[in-house]
Image (cartoon, rainbow, N blue to C red; front, side, top):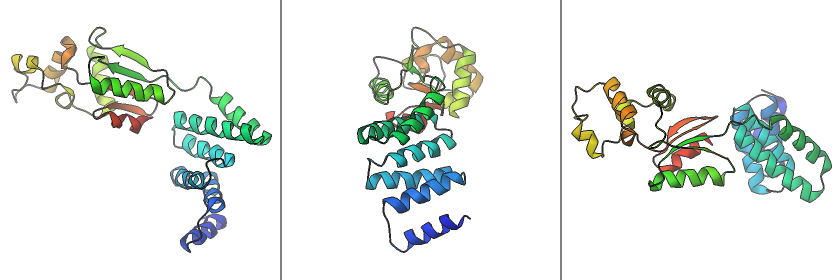
Length: 221
């Protein structure tokens, strides 16, 4: 363990908390590639002073190290606004370089959306509020192929039984509630009858989720 990390952790353990302790610890942890711990301390630093542009810069690095590129870019954008307002040209230049480097690298999220569903509308609004420009697939009109659907379920870690809309009348009409119905048969039914696909599925660079409740989408933003 780095001496500086050990010293700052001791300082924190003694009850001496503050912006500089949290920032210094976060920065040191990033340099030692302990990104998740670093992010926690840098967020704590920003809780002391949200206008500390260097904390935004290093928080972005911590998030980037975890593969959370969209969140990293948002941190750098926040830091850039702060640094510009404060006239901190060195931080401005650094943040502009980071943002330029990642421009166009973040794939647009995709939402499999049903506009009549309140949960689906809420998730779509969350995506837009986060500054993303989601690809909206109205799956009842543009039904995903069986292959695409199987991929979504695999990425989300769900079985067809967990992803099917068992409340739909068609589910019982087709006898899909019978215990002997296999996953392959359920997947066939969903691919042939899009109304049986639960919603909304969302795919981002951080993963795929069936976003019920809507707040599940935050896991992949």
